[in-house]
Image (cartoon, rainbow, N blue to C red; front, side):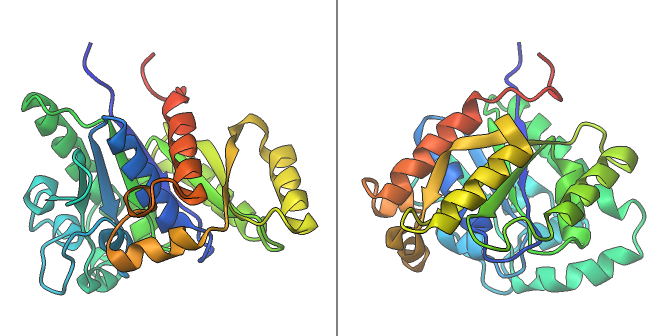
Length: 270
């Protein structure tokens, strides 16, 4: 039987919830475990590209060229220098204009889905099947995030353990439901990851409890703590799993990756 590629969009329209950090560190941990993993950076800021150490200066071909139809994903894929098996489709500042350019295009929500389908099929035909594709979406519910939701089978939802954690979440869940109804019936929220947990505060424990009450088994049991090494790693163009492998941040991201790998979403063939 052919190996199954899991396509996971990491989304939350709220900024600063550990979305990019979770994408690159889980991707790094999965690749270190022997998986072939591709990170697609859908955010014009290009932070995921920075964290995995790939070039995303202005003019470097990346996801923008794919979305406007000038390149295939395989043309713009770059290897992560630190982790074998991990590659990245970078985002440059050009991507900021893509939302406007795509508005008038036919089937604009399906641009990424079609490119990704071809990319996964070609990789499998070449004997290098992809195990995971992780899409890092911008903190908004615009056309870039929509392309990410239409292209994926799963959504990983990072939620920070702070006061406003659940605020705006209902809007995101409505968007996911709308995408399911009209554009991608296979989409499901397969995992929720609690981030930026500070064990010294009662609030963090209350928020974690509230999220678990709300979402039940979909919440991963691993909680990502606030950890200075996690914040430092991108400035060295690395994920925390290579920058400081024994730090609490690296250890918990490896645990979260293992939990995510053990999930078998219903939307895939059994």
